[in-house]
Image (tube, rainbow, N blue to C red):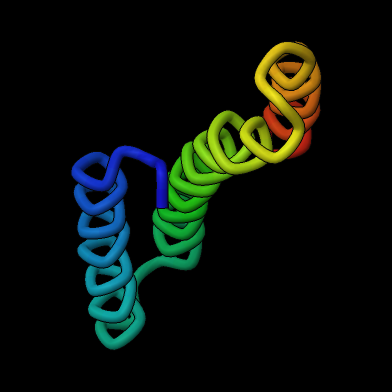
Length: 87
């Protein structure tokens, strides 16, 4: 994996903590909107991690496979689309 492992690991641990919190909220029969807000926060972190992993893959693995000169521009185009789709 070419993504920043330290950052991805930190974000995954944060998401795991949020999931643990969500389980506790459900077990405690907390207010639905509070649970929904926490779910959306967790999803946002997971999307951020996925963008970072895909960006690293496109900028590394795919660029290497295509040849660096023309790959950079195409990788940026794809990342702009992924960014729009992940919001």
